[in-house]
Image (cartoon, rainbow, N blue to C red; front, top):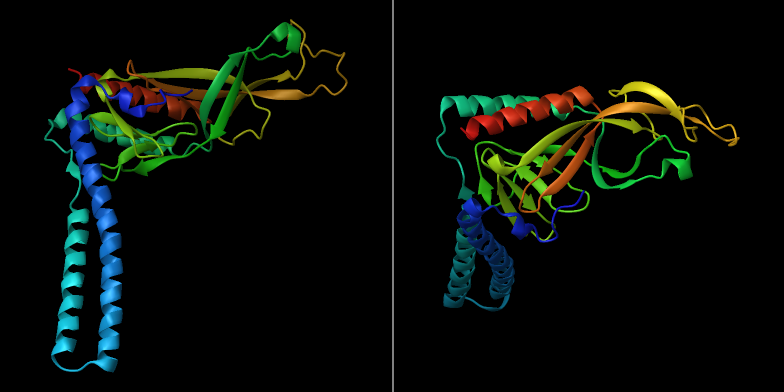
Length: 285
């Protein structure tokens, strides 16, 4: 699945002011990084000049070169300090029930990370079963990705974000109050976590690749089948295909977020989805 091309448009109305603040912070951070490059180059030049001064100049002028070098070093350290402090702290005080629910979500997510395979579903299309003689009703294009913990570098929080990598769009960073979708150009949108549609779907998948060890194989079919499910004997090279039960997660918003993932362990994906929806319910009260 693919979200809107312009991730900035995914921002929900109530988070536009926060996005503007983060954008200002990001622009300042970018300028500081550029200034650090210039300052390092200037410091390097001053150090070279100081070395030459020892060789060809004496007295007062050497002191000047030393002071020049020290001033540039101090300036560089000051800019690097500014860069380290250039972020927006999003932590707010919440009641005990909300924090407890979020900690449960984190525990469930850590369990989810133990799934052997996670795929980003990049597209789906219907299949003409009669024409193809396939047992599948739709064709799914997927790409293996990783989930983990991470942070959008202009945000500071006591909690690391739940980081969903995306094969064909911006990565998702799930924080306690919102989801940040960040593309490769560092353009981003913010979506209120209460306004996200988070759905779980049990999917029977005809696995033609290696079956993950943590998957539940619920049956078998054939590459070419008759209407009754028996193998079509007209195809000599017909082969059997295991049917796996996977857990799919769909994440959508009215502003254009549209992502879908498939996980090899159905039960872990289902448990995480239930925990996520429970958290949404608590913060929405």
